[in-house]
Image (tube, rainbow, N blue to C red; front, side, top):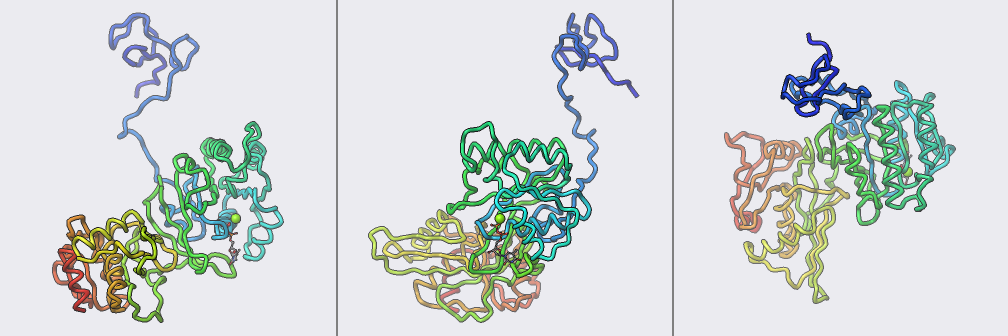
Length: 446
Ligand code: TYD
Ligand code: MG
């Protein structure tokens, strides 16, 4: 094996073990400098290496003690990774993180920094949750310099900052919570995490507009961004990864808030279906596939005469731009205009559906509301609708159909290309449609 080169040519980058007046590689004179030495040459930067020469041990991961959280993270917490956990106030961010940290503190030094509550309040919550965490350290502090100084002493491997909006950098004149403060405080903490290979959770509150207050800027600084979703009226909570450098995005973790904190729901596909629901017009069951698991949700539409010259289009849990497009499609390819009506569409249970596979469900819910004709409760749908009114297949069609069959549904309207090819008998009558008009026809004749 060659010894480590300690000289390098300024011109061509050739490396050698000895200094020479002329570079062997490119012939340049006086271009050789000592790597890392004080020879006046440029300071040697980190060397680029061949991808194929990089040995990567499998990324190490720690369990958070909550399978659903681990799954959203891509299989656990990666040392040195920075994870932003966003969500509305009161949704359960502090709860889940104290639960996870308590569990992790059994094997790893862990530090919970609270800027919002006193140490006593956090301790009280941990007690209420009956968490046993004799090794977990708490720090009630908002000055980022003090936090980092303390953390350098405590040397945690995993750390929580709750919340980033309360932390400030003393050198800056802005108020805590301002964009500059949040960004700079987070930057300092991220540097600390990377320097020390500490896993770091940053809690961020979300404003009503659904954005992390100010710090959308944080999203690019961190390795993973998780958002808590859920209705304040419901006990169910979803955590979705919208960015993850160590795993897939759009993976969903499902929890239920109980007296004893957040509990995982391992089999959530039917969670959001109301068992006692009657056959009401405007309601359609969609099989959505969030991450790796199918989830059945109810899409509801209410379309009614608008008192205004500017009818409203409101989409809750769905993309409102896309709703506008779908309504135009409905007019053009379904012959149903909604120009004088207000249109409200909602996904029951506070779930957000981000995939286009919801198109058909939204359209059928609208038609059902417009015509006051209910869709059978034994029917599920999914499918994307293109601008020409064509039905487009969606990923993992078979899996969706299987899940629906498992839950007792009897019929499905789906894009023709999603119909199982070899006529797999899954106990479900599957109607494949090529055009939106065909799907509407199916609905009318049901
Ligand atoms: P919290 O984790 O404090 O929310 P966040 O940090 O996101 O603001 O959760 C607060 C809510 O959760 C509060 O309304 C009470 C409820 N809760 C339970 O129902 N059970 C519990 O065991 C705990 C700790 C909280
Ligand atoms: Mg909190």
